[in-house]
Image 1 (cartoon, rainbow, N blue to C red):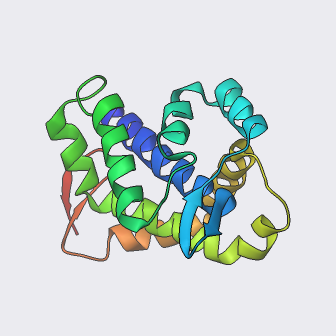
Image 2: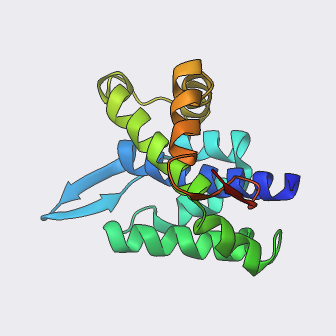
Length: 165
């Protein structure tokens, strides 16, 4: 059970990281969007999150859109989590789980609710992780997440077990 939660968190971190990259480092040129992560930021990533450096390098300097972004993240998860660290069935189960969907939904809410603050300055990914984790741990958000998990007759918990409510 613990490995399912750990794998879900690893997958969620990949998606949060990719969102952070797009939030700060997308530039428009000739009516197209490009990801341009400066060298000093790549060094910070290499030091603080070496396991995510490859993801940053995959799209850096290249044109980016929603589909390319999805493809890039899926390729990264496939190469680094799905198989090397976890079974294919586990990763698929997590991606299809209500717990994962809720976590990504909550992350989207966090970004929307804090967009002005996040946009004031380029904040390191480690700060995003710390801020999101603190927000996610508040009683109000924890209660909301619990209500979302319980909102259907058959919910899948973060550990992958089906529970009837």
